Amino acid sequence: MKECLLFAMRRKSPTEINRILTGRFEAWLLAQHYSAMTHTRHLAAARRFSEFLGDRLLTTTTHADVQDHLSICAKRGCSQQTLQIELHGLRALFDFLSLGGLITWVPPRMVVMHSSGRRYPRYLSKDQVKQLFSAAKSPRDRIILEVLYGTGCRSCELCSMRAEDIDDRERRVRVKAKGPGFRFLMLTPRLVKLLRNYLGKRRTGYLLGDGRAPQRIHAYPTPSGAWYAHYRTYDEKGNKLRIVTRYVPAGVCSSASSAAEEIRRRFKEDRLERPQGLKRMSIHYLHMIVSRLGAHVGIRAFPHILRHSLATHLLDNGADLRTVSACLGHSHLKTTMVYLHTSRKQAEASFQKAHPWK
Image (cartoon, rainbow, N blue to C red; front, side, top):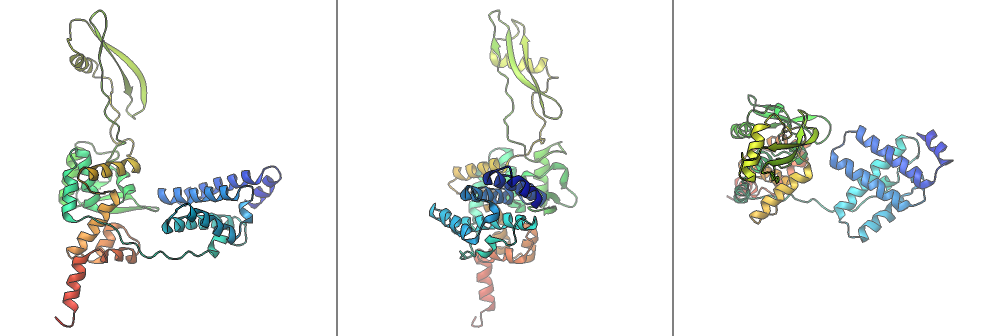
């Protein structure tokens, strides 16, 4: 990579070279199989810093440049946590440049941020969870809340969940983990039954589709009294084939709704809907659904708060820390220990049990 850069420096401007290096960094992030969120944040940090440098090369960066960039971000109102994320992204970028032999030291490693302290997760009480569930009227909204709270999965894990990975006998489901590889989520008998009722006869594809509404047929009259309709047809892979026009002769139907039903009956070989489960629901759309359900009952809700709530309620009911850690898919027990601060019930019980003056 060093030889390529030296060759490019003869023909391109520093801005163009920085753009090339950022593109190579993006490809390297993909090869590392980071989570989608980590990939997006690191790449955004690299692009913002390249814009900050202007017509200077990334390879000429010093730790003072990193400090100046973070200072500008802070003046724009970025929080301490956002600055930490920005610094982590810059460290990943310059680690990449160092591995390629373009720099001999990593300037962001020389910058240390003041610790903002541990942030404790927000969670819902059991009554609030029941209120949130009461807002789910459709089967899709209900299964979203059931899986999020029933398994403690992450948003990305729910969106990537597939019907063929659900094991009824072992009561577990395989999902794409946050990092590389897969992990298994534990299912309760109740949740297994709910999943099978939701899927029906479908045994393949994503559990949650892309959220597109079913195609509706609108029939229109002609001067002669016949009816016609335009609609899209799909193949078995969900690709749009073409837009077709179908007719119903005069005198058969008297209204637009009856004409639409007659067209459906006569041309039932047309595939009007995309097969379910071919395209996954986006994380953004999932967050919008949960947020909307929470707004109906006056609760600020998002998918991850149900994960926090499950962990806290498991500890309240006497589950040990390792069980909760396995349920959440944490690599280190230290990550799960933060929920001990939110579980007041277990803390008070332990205090009363261990206090020397009972």
